[in-house]
Length: 125
View 1 (cartoon, rainbow, N blue to C red):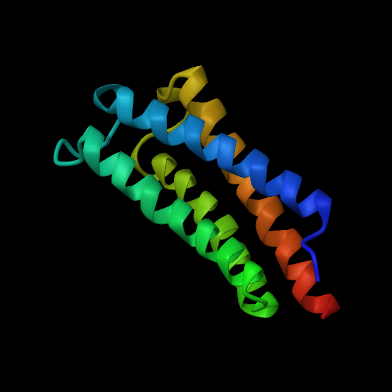
View 2: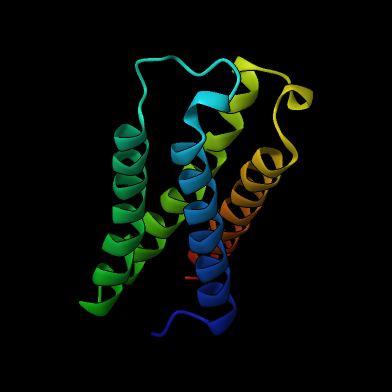
């Protein structure tokens, strides 16, 4: 079984959106409204590595033939993209910059698409 090309494209888009959001967050952490001062640049990049490792683990599982587990991990990876919406529990959308909002929403949307497409793949199996 191969992961459908459309899903691979969605995962690539989500990965890029995630890189954009986390790198913007890390580099402009002081300007994100409501962010605790205890969260620094390094912590943001480490969080991104942790989330991305779930996606990498999914592709590794696929490579070794654990297709159902791989698809489930891919769904979890996508779901983790929704975590960026937690920014809005700290400050309103209007309090974030346009770029911050764009990176947050692009990551959340792409993650939701990866999660949804993974759920469809699981249902088909």
